[in-house]
Length: 235
Image (cartoon, rainbow, N blue to C red; front, side, top):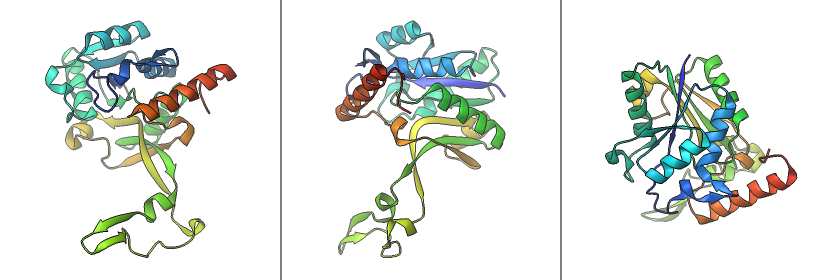
């Protein structure tokens, strides 16, 4: 099976401006995803889809192949799936074989080459059409959710799960680090959560999603600590 690796990296992030190009522990945040993808050894090329000259330069310097996306695909409401499918269509028209798309968002800089390699192998072995990386979630966060109903604050699921933690069903959250879809089904669903769906479980220590300054600062601290320890990343 031939995978196409796409790293969507626009310039116009709003909550943390230009986050994909910010210096994270001494290098652009984008670099961590490019390098992990290359070191996974499963891609002929690693494509960074961007509309921005500066990010394109960073991508090329890190060893990626730059794919210039249309400006219309760089807006706030454009999904990563749309960006990935546009890249896949262009590559197919150029004569490349694309059996599946692997989406690696640069906002997950703690994801490792081994994570990518292991997730891909699990996807291939499972014969699923989709795979997403997930992280165990404290079941209290899910089952004990509260919301403001018309009659006031209420337990979202009622009192069905108002039991002690060991008795609560385990839950997982998609962490955004790795998303894989077979090209045909992916075009049909336009998202990476179609069926049959498999998951690749990652620990919390590698599942940070950088959206705001606090996330960025935390990732910076984790990566600097790992560098001082000589491990390269947190396990």
